[in-house]
Image (cartoon, rainbow, N blue to C red; front, side, top):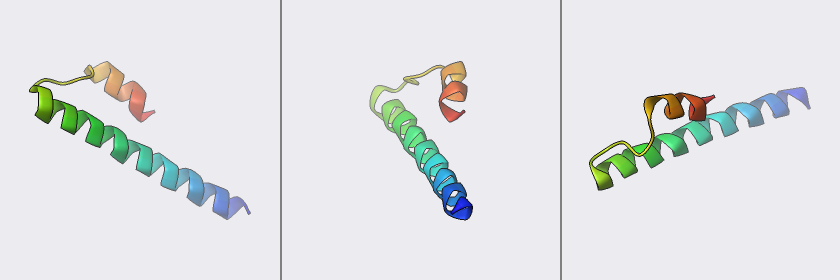
Length: 46
């Protein structure tokens, strides 16, 4: 049970980080500038 919860948490954390990274990259490619500041990126990762 505990092992499943840890694996689920890790998977969700990695998936959310990848999704947020894709959002920033696509926004940068479309607009030519960063859609979020560096400090906001740090807050999103945590």
